[in-house]
Image 1 (spheres, helix red, strand yellow):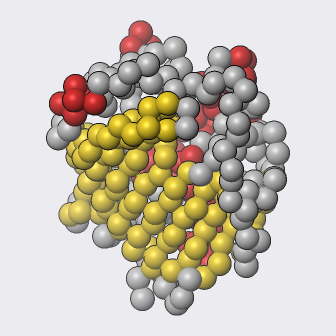
Image 2 (tube, rainbow, N blue to C red):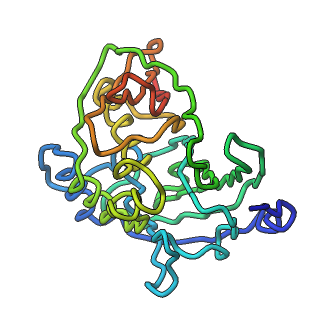
Length: 281
């Protein structure tokens, strides 16, 4: 499958603006999904929990066979079949609070096509700027990768071993956890909840744990270790998929007085996601 890079670059600079309200119910439900103690559902949003808002709302007839909205709207019509959240970088300026009316302006920052191990890869970089009642709250760069299906018999890529870490929390993913997170983020991507599809069509061994869910777990670990400190920045990269077949560890260690190195360690000891979180003094 050939990707027409020049045609896709016509989407560069495309922008959209959405408005939402930080309502308490999604916060309460995500706390339950992550098995966190209940609270009164008010106060500041934890880092990355803004992903509960500005959700896609494509009509059912506008969904593709993978459960994602059909391509060619805000995001470019990349013809490659697999789409993954590859990573992101965020800067935090001020907290968002439950009850805030918020606005997000999203812009296609860049589109690049590169050769990969199994064929061409297309990377789409989206810039999100989120503002609340007091002004700019955060800036986020969202990296999406589109890739071809894996070839039968293709060798598995090599993966880096993960260190043990000074902090470690074990997570046992199951289809209920993944379904609840998909529902909370209105994410119809079938790789996260449809076992017949993910194994039979995309050829994975099990349901795939959401990249944003793992990033949220990492940010939560960092925030608990630096309790009382406001986050300044968070960046993460997805390195390999994690499936619901085995437990995984959310790990970290301090990186100086104002930062933490964080990572997901899968059941084979590989590093599945790497992240860094910085805090204000």
